[in-house]
Length: 378
Ligand code: SAH
Image 1 (cartoon, rainbow, N blue to C red):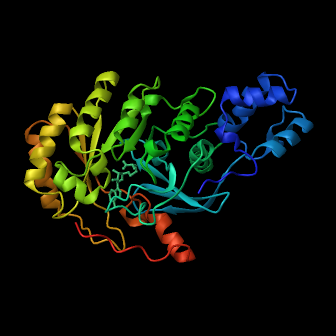
Image 2 (image 1 turned 45 degrees about the horizontal axis):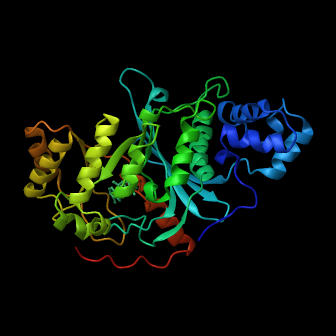
Image 3 (image 1 turned 60 degrees about the horizontal axis):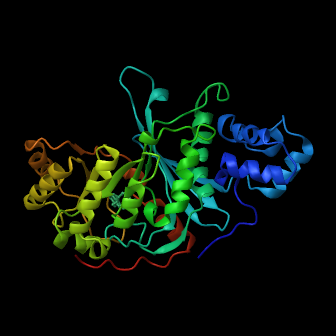
């Protein structure tokens, strides 16, 4: 299950670890910063473009590191504002990275706000009943370098879309760790990757612009609360009582609401920032008025923001999205209590943008996956 590439990716190095490697090779410390500048600021894609390094150093780098551990298989653009990149890793595993563009009023499309959704595992072990990512279980964790590489691939794509690409490098507004996998189950690699993404010598994305989403691994939520970098947290709640939640999220057996809610409380206290509760609306599973009332009470106690997400249908799974009326009725229960709530406008439904769907289809097409198991009825 573990994959060790022949050469470690450059995208998994920090300024310190790269400096140490260069020292061993007899190079001065300042080379590390130069190399990371080429990678993250100038975004060259070959060693030979790193023109202020000697030829022997470039050869040493090429022998020692993989410059980019993920290659683009294809880029699927939806009719709305979502772009989905399917990437292939060194062991042929497939991962997905999504670009969500929100156009801004009064300016051209090149000024859209951009949120990038990244993956942290190939597959997922959490086995949420509604989710495509977990259908075939966990294949393996991603390394920090593979996680960072997704963002560089997005940069390459966006730079190419921007006129005068090299003069005006593309940037993005938010990163959400909501792609394939459970980020807190791959804690160390995810945190290292986000540290690189956040660093001034890396991609320089502020910690407040980065949101980790978890299905609710309580000990890891508490650990995250103690990290020096203040990343934001979103919790995939999807059920406002244990009875409903445990039908669709097996993780609720190990960490029921009586454990999860105090952990979220602790996180909020330490951070002083609002946590987001994500709640997918699935017809006749969790979209009753009773559930809305329970969710309202939880959100009010936690001072949390609620993100209601109409379910994206997954081929082979029986779940349905409730009607717009039902969605609004649910949201109204929260609005009436002045709980901050977003009912997410449709993005990317037409390109299978929900977690894990594109990979699932491609692997089925490639014959790498047997038919998805029949979903258990809730
Ligand atoms: N494992 C993490 C992050 C990945 S899932 C977590 O559970 O939070 C990111 C979000 O997409 C989660 O809220 C997840 O429940 C949701 N999701 C998964 N499948 C979906 C679907 N078919 N439609 C809508 N949202 C979905």
